Amino acid sequence: MSWNWEVIGETGLQFFGKVSASISHEIKNVIAIINENAGLLEDLIARSEKGIPLDPERLRTQANRIIKQVRRGDDIVKGMNRFAHSVDEPLRQTDVNDSLALTCALSNRFASMRGVALELDPSPTQVPIITNPFFLQNLIWLCLDFAMGSTGTGKAVSLKAGKTEGGAEIRFSKLEDLAAADIESFPGERETALLQALRADLVINKEMGELRLTFPVQAEG
Amino acid sequence: MKILLVDDEHELVSTLAERLSFRGIQADWAISGEEAMRLAEKNTYDVAVLDVKIPRIGGLELKRRLQSKLPVLKFIFMTGHGSEEDFRNCSAETADGCYLVKPVNIEDLIQKMNELVKVSEVSP
Image 1: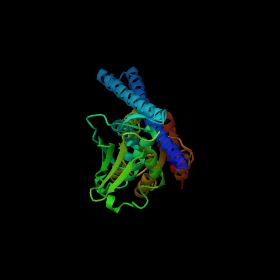
Image 2: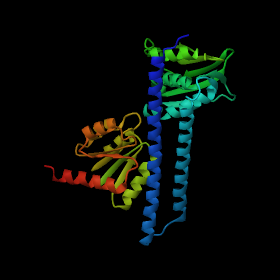
Image 3: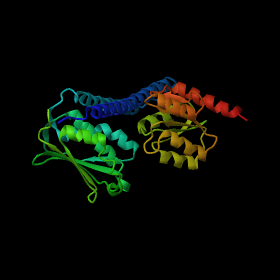
């Protein structure tokens, strides 16, 4: 099967750029918080040099806050690293549940900007398929982006990956406004190109307010 | 001088507010546009320091809404990105240079706030 490489390439680059910019914003926030906490420590020391008593508990609180931000920064960089390595191989065994969790983590800031909560219901077991992990994440992101615009007053998207007889599925539910959504333009050219490349299917269930992606055990090489 | 700080990072604004208080500057803080608007209903401020990327509303829209409540309020934007687009948008909304990239140096921030308040004092 011939894939629409032009669309897939452009969509992939846009996705990579969008996620990278979001990660840089998150890292900047972590650095900014560490900067303020370190600055506050300096202020407390300067005040103690002027005779204002320094409470050791206050120092402990500040140290804990810095440690918390270092951990947060480390988690962000780990996610960024996993995302960057998703382009390493065009086809490999991939846990759909894991890809969904990573894409959710990378999308949290976008969701927060839109006032939408992402409710990930993790599968208790792995959901393995052989696929292109970057295309998979890109398709999840595009569906999630559409889903976030269809939440209605609930302002939440529920996400769940699971095994099927033929491979795997991802469900995006709680989409209260799906019936009113513009499904003439979704799936569009980008989603269609990725669906073809992954040999995946997308079913839009307006009544249930749900998008369902299904994947075969093995995509084409 | 009374300041309103708005950023969705709770620890950032609360710590910054405490550090400003050590320097004799009273600062209230909010972690959402809605909270900021509620504070602006009950208080007056000289300067608002806004994150460009505030969830749901965005810093530029929040600036417009705050300005409609407090017409003489001055604004400084903070951003983590430092992108050309942010710079252009913020420059169009504020006096020159009222745009700081995180992490912000508190002395630079205070200098900007003092400049803005002085300008507003001498303006007719």
